[in-house]
Structure formats: structure tokens, C-alpha cells
Amino acid sequence: MVIRIGNNSLQLIVGDITKQTTDAIVNAANGSLLGGGGVDGAIHRASGPELLEECKQIRKEQLKGEYLPTGEAVITKGYRLPAKYVIHTVGPIWTGEGIDEKKKLLANCYINSLNLAKSYNLNSISFPSISTGVYRFPIDLASEIAIESIVNFLQTNIFGDVVLTLFTQNDYNIYFQAAQKIIKTN
Ligand code: ADP
Image 1 (cartoon, rainbow, N blue to C red):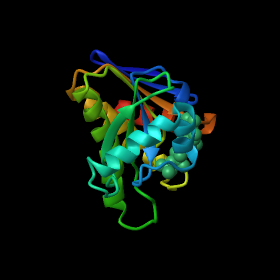
Image 2: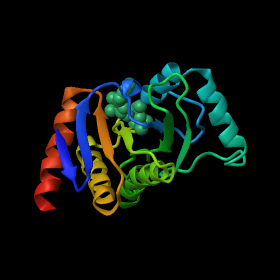
Image 3: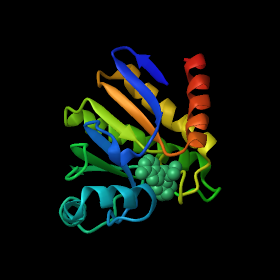
């Protein structure tokens, strides 16, 4: 599915984000930036050990030893990945409490990643379904927040192409429904 928004596009695909050839791919990282399971582990394995080294460097210098706060984003090189850059963002952990705040933080992941990509003059970016794996954010809600945030950005910026890379057909179907709903109301 491809949605045209001015000169920009939003595409939904089923695929493996580590294979994407967009200028950047987004990592659903944890605040430590030291790697983990899920998409984070897959990206680190495909990129190679240099990625972890650069993440450690960012923790030390840019973040003064602190964790990357939820909703924020940082950028590294892609190393052995087809993508030139990796944008690391930390999604909120769903607990069923503070729902409005969690929704805002998830939107921030998409918005801050897009703004960072734009500030590097990148023209294409692939996102995974942030927070809907081990962080347990309900995917129906997460898909609406993701698409709304991206559509909003593409309506107000000259950027290029955004790809939502969904790992399963089921995830794709949920994002597809959210996209249809949001396009109708736009
Ligand atoms: P989070 O901690 O933000 O929930 P996860 O990595 O656990 O992150 O899951 C986020 C989403 O990424 C899940 O939908 C999962 O199926 C998906 N995922 C896992 N591996 C890949 C991959 N290689 N490419 C794209 N998506 C992936």
C-alpha cells in the first residue's frame, strides 16, 4: 500500500527492516542503547559490532552516561546494513497506566526520528512497529498513532519516502486498517 502526500509517500510493506535500502532505518531500542532482543537484536547482528561501539560512544558523550529518554532519538551510521544510517528511538512500555502520556511518547518516537532524518537531509526512512513487541503496546492503538504522526509530518514537511516495515502479515493488516481509517478522516 502506498499513500501519496504531496511529494512525499508513506508505504506499508511486510518485511525485514535490516534489508531495507532506505537512507535510514529506525531501531526500536531500549534506553541503554546496548542492544536487546527483537528488532534491536536483528539490527545489531546485521550491522556488526561497530554499531554497538558507536552507541556506547553516544551514551558516554552525547548522553553523559544517562539512558536515552523514552520518545527521543539519536542517529548512528548503518555499517554493514544497506541503510546508511540507523536512528535509535525508545518506545514507551505499555503497563495499562498513564495511557495519554504513553500515546504522546509513542508519537514522539516517530516525530523525533523524522525530524532527525530531515536534519541530516535524508529522503527515505523505514520504521518498524515501535513498542508493539516486548513493550506490549496494543498494536491497534500503536498503528493509529504511528500513521497519524507520520501523515502529519508528511503534510507539513518536504521529506521523501517513509516505509512502515511490518514483520508479519497480521501486523500489516492492522496497520492497513489504521491507514484506511486515517486517510478517510483527513
Ligand atoms: P519493542 O521493545 O519496541 O516492543 P520489539 O523488537 O520487541 O520492540 O518489537 C517491535 C516490532 O518489531 C514487533 O512487531 C516485532 O515483530 C518487529 N520485528 C522484529 N524483528 C524485526 C525485523 N527484523 N524487521 C522488522 N520488524 C521486526
